Length: 504
Image 1 (cartoon, rainbow, N blue to C red):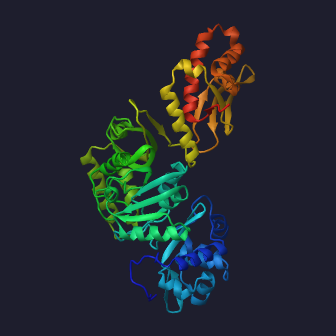
Image 2: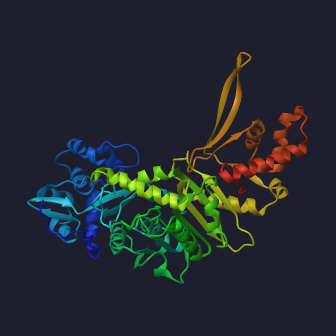
Image 3: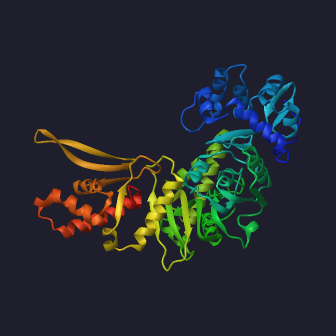
C-alpha cells in the first residue's frame, strides 16, 4: 500500500482539539479492555492477538461495527476502506486524523499509523511495529508490556507533589502518576518516546506532564522528587540496537546506576520504584548484588525477585524475535550473548524490582521477597502497608510488640492438608494465603491459627497469646514460651500483610 506519510513519524500532540476528538471516538465505540476481550475472543489481561492469529481473529469481527474497525486499524494493523475508517473515527474527521499522523491513507484504504493499547482505564499510543519483529528501528517506542504493568502495580498511588519518570518510553508510568501528582517530569533520551508521552498525556486528558530530553537523570540534575518511577533499558545485553532495551552500559551497570541515582533524587520520605535486571555469580544468593546497590544511599531497600534464567536461557529469550530473521541470526545472537555473560562471570541473570524509601535514620532496613510463584499483580496500597510494617518491626522491641494491638487482614484464607491416620482424617499441615495483591503464603501451626483468631484489635498481643495458650495448657509449655512464639509469629505475619496494626 502506498501511504501519504513519512516513515518513523509520531502522532501530533500539538492538536489538542483533534486528540480530544480521537479520545471521544475511541471511548464512544467502546475501546475498553472488557469490550475488546469480548469482541476479540481473548482471555487474560493481554488483548493483543499473536500475529499468526490475526487472520482468524479478523474474520470473527463484525463487518460494519465501529469498535471492530477501530480494532482493525489500531490493534490488528489492518487496512480498511476509507469510508468505514471515516465512520469509525467520527467525530474526528479522517483528513484531520491523517494530518495528526494517527492514520495513513493510500489507494482508497486507511491503516493506523500507531497502535493504541489499553492499560486499565487509560489508553496508550505506541509505534505500529510489534516488539516481536525481528528488526526494529533503534528509536522504536514500545507499547504496554508486562514490565509496564508490573511497575504500575507496585507504585504507591497516594497524592504527591513532584514525580520523575526516568526512561519514560511512551509515558505509561507518567500518565498513571499524573492522576495523583501535581507535576510529572518525563525524561528519555529518545525524542520520539517523548513525543508519544506528550500525545498519551493529552489522549488521557492530562495537562501536568512535562517532557525533557536527555540521558537518564541528566535533565533533572540538582532536582528532587517525592516519587521516582523507572522502567529503564534494563536488559543485560552486549548490543546497542534498541534504545528501549539496550543501555550500552556493561553488565547490570544500568540498573545499579538508576537505583543509586533515583535515591539521590528523592526528597526525605520519597519513594522510588525501579525495574532491574542483575547478574548473579555462581554460588551467590540473588539479593547479594542489590544490597550493595542501596548501601549508603540513605534509603530503606526492598528487593523483589520476579524471575531468573540461566545465561543461555536469558540470551534465548531476548533473541527470540531473530528466529523470524535470516537463517543463523538467532543462533549467532545467543552464542554472542552467552559468551558475554561468561566474560562477566554470571551464573544466572535475574529480573525484578527495587523499591526505595528515603529516610533520615541511623540505620536503614532491607528486605527481599521472591515472587516466583506470586503471579498476581501487586497493589500500591499493599506495598505502602508493608513498608509501614517494616518501619514498625525495625523500631519496636519484643516487649513493645507484646503490648500492641493487631487486627487480621480479612482477605485471606487458611488451607489445611488432611491425611488418613488410624482410620480417620487428621490435619497434616496448614498454610495461610493472602487473596489480594501479592499472594504471600506461610505455613502455620495450631498455636498460630489459634492466636490469629484472637487478634481482634481490642486485646494486646500479650493478652491474645495468653488466651490462645489456654488451649494448649496440658502440653507442659511455659507461658513465657508462648509469648516468645507469639512475638516471632507476629513479626512474620505482619511483614507479609496477614495482620495489621490496630487503629482502635
